[in-house]
Length: 586
Image (spheres, rainbow, N blue to C red):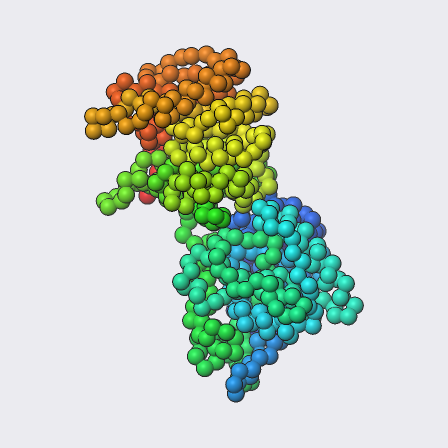
């Protein structure tokens, strides 16, 4: 097979199919079974610019494709031996001389990866990831020991831009030692290791990291398993360890040694590691497809925030297209899965059938195919944003927004802050934490969620200034007359405690600066300003019903995204029958 068989733009499934036969072929024990590098005009700068625009999953698919296509420096291909002893046994395992990188010897990029992508690559190449003990032994055996280069901890530490900055720092260190130790000499200290550990089966969805040894041999990072698998920052490095090794001169496999009680201490400080891999290491074509071909990734953001990002199908065709990122703060009492929704079956919790944000965003994507809508579902600990804010304050909320943006990629052009019920608390916390609402917040939507509106906190002034600053800023507020609603025959919301009062208060405050017009659509009063960029849709509730979640279910999320645009009411009616039925997942 010549180098003409692959190109750096070849899609991952094609490369994996092409490579599968190659991986199974006999090869020298000290070589990674990679094809020759394609002859292309590849450069680190071009590659970094391309993957910086991609969501995490797409970025990792691209990196994986480049590695399996052979776009790896030559010096990384020849493995280095590390010899260890325990009791009467002596073993030698073989490791890549540095952390995984794409590119050439002259121009390469060290690539932080999630453990799932890292292990997927390792398995395809007949390798595994190291244990903490192996990371220690690799450091001891290294001819080149680099001093760790720490960067300030910020939300940007998970972005490709910071990956690139750190790559440049470590590369400069390594180049300075090149005369003494050419590339290919065993090198350590530049990154933390993504490792395997005996506790992995008890930590589903988590990543284990360890190492980043100081020059005195002590690790900065003890074994840590607190991050979700989708947490990938600049400090993470992927060290490939070949499965083929020797014990007392006889060939063995790393997995077999780790599962042998007598031999495991050669490689593990924890004894036997029976499951020496992460639980989900299937390649994209081996994984069951998400509903409607979408991609979904979930991660955690401290303290106590769980986030799921849903990206539409056909992502490849949308690279470079402006992204509409909708950050949807969950209502009190709902999980992300319940908020996304599905077709209910016997025994399901009723929460799965009251919002259907997943189906409603699919409807919007169909109606507006020229825009790329990405939804980030943001869930607070205890399923309550008001409770979360009482414990943590407001100052951390802009960092949550920044973390979501970093995961989605650098192509985000328009951000919507949206929330239902207690999710509005997230939006008001954001308003409290910023001196002014940034220009790239293009839309703010309250779906019966204005409980926290307070003129004394400057909410009205900030909203008015934001609406005046750019002609594409839009505000949508949905509410119903909740203080007359009856529960068991009695009112349950005070005259000033619900969204009816707070939404009208917000509208009156904005009316001091903007001219509103009033229309009606059945029981719904519509107050509009700025040529429809501001919409208050207020249901009079003559039946005195509880319409809190009904407003969302009856196309409310669709309305919140399309109000004030030419697509408003196209193919749906707010408070009409569900327009998104065909988009509800099983």
